[in-house]
Image (cartoon, rainbow, N blue to C red):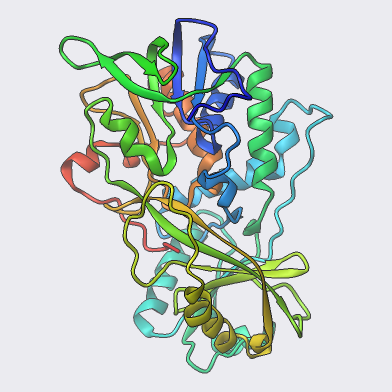
Length: 406
């Protein structure tokens, strides 16, 4: 359905770049392109839901961490932290732009067996080689710093208090959109319903909108979140990306903790953290199939039977808690390796992926948006080599595995 409160019809019949999807990633790519002095082309962003009422961006928990097992993912999040902490500077010190802090209470990965503890140690060595502040803690050390945990079954933990925690992703998103528009990017409330390729299928020449308008394009960027495969199929491309439901719960504690709760990844699969005056928890369902694109129904048994028992077990002080709010959102889940799919297609040369972030999307959006803008402008990545995320690995069925998935 076209959102009638926003411009529907594009002002031009041809654009250098057409971005399909205007949420966090579409707006990141649009802003970094518009901000690049070497790019002087026209940009159209087509967003099917300009109210952004159901996109992954509005359901995110806005967290950032450097605790990944791949050096490239660590570097990506380090640029994310740099971008957040220097947000106004990236916008030319515009006085309208707010400062955005990172609430660095850190992530705490808890291992209840030696093999996972060793995985944490291996990943920590990668992180430290990149300059991250991650440290491995024994159960005794965890209890010393956070005496509210039950660590009876814990072998080790991995913790980092530097540039890990929560940030205001919504404000970043809002300023990317606002600034991109001020720099000439055109946003419309419409929907791409088909794509037309040239005779040999090597280029997408135009896209057709739900309104019936035909738009010629130099490049097409797929920034469609969980709907990525619906967009890629218009160009005859299959993607291993599907919507997976993730649950978030906000709760109040009868006995609040006397210090910040790190984003704790419990061995049960439940994670929890401080959230202002309240606390936030989340988890996947035990049965985790692809869901319908419009399925945001909640399953309250997950709170009763999975989340709450795990929370109370890990933090006995949380035996008396009250659910305040909850929602279900979608991961754009890459079934091959839960890592991003980025860059140009192998044969449809002007079709560009920004897909499959599997829950890492918000924290990775500055580096991925910058890299995609570089690829469009220069034909290559210049700041970080993001080529390991390329579509060619999908074609070869060779995962670029990341061990630290939440």
